[in-house]
Image (spheres, rainbow, N blue to C red):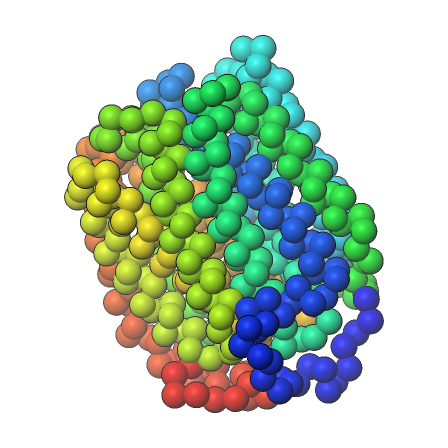
Length: 433
């Protein structure tokens, strides 16, 4: 893909509002990637819901639910820094194809072993751990590749928002679909559907020209030091990564507890589980549409603040209610606020990051997002086993409100360091950064 000219990197004239939200899809390469990724992510959510339901039905253990969630994402805490170096050294399209093929194989393994009744606890944990290692490459690859597939640099924020949209359309559609499939068939079918869904992204990637390669870092050790030194020395990057980690540590802890709430609190089955997760997905989808409609990265720090406080309030409200309709409303707000916080942070990062460090820093962002969520899920599983799922999530919600208050205290300090970075890219100032 040809490198955009210097002029193309400057913000152009305002586009008509009607096409503003979808402008990144004008790039054919990104358009193929968008639709292939959408189908793949629907399958991923179907598998995640089915695995959680299967684990809880077989074991009645909130600890094991937390352990599966932990192993599915926690390897990113260790693997992500090295995965980022590999991404910066590699042909990203080729690496993405390899990772998608391995994830397809993992899904088919789960389908076959579940169908024949061979799936034991230790195999579930091993399969979750393998998926966690693959996720360490998959998530930052999805983020970094998207920015390379658009023709104009000023379309990158819209590509990131559209990436968020694909994840949240899948999050909205996948869980209810999983509930229907579980009620009508079995978890094995859900795992097989996920395996087939990877073919959509694999086929899309095969029809996309590889982005231009960059010179690899001199060595793994030097590249690792360079990436970590950049994060330590950049106030906005450091503060954003810390906020993402704290928000996801507390807010995402609700996910592994949903089978327990669906069955024990709301007296339901797979369909109730699908509706609960689908409600959070609906909120996330609305957040994606909101972010797509934005014309500038300016103002997103304020969105992160408001979303952090809203997430804590919604999680607290969810933990305190035994009414399904009210729980659905709280999950809608929780899903909305988490995506606003995560996607806004991602957009700011991709706007200010040097190209040569993109893979490494986005891998750290993924670790802060999914890795922190995994640790939070594991800890809430242990706490829920001792004091109950509702009390565990109530504690997480109150602590999350405190996280929002902490961010507010340091917000202006971060904005002072962001303004010159925005100005250097010709991003027009506004009242709030």
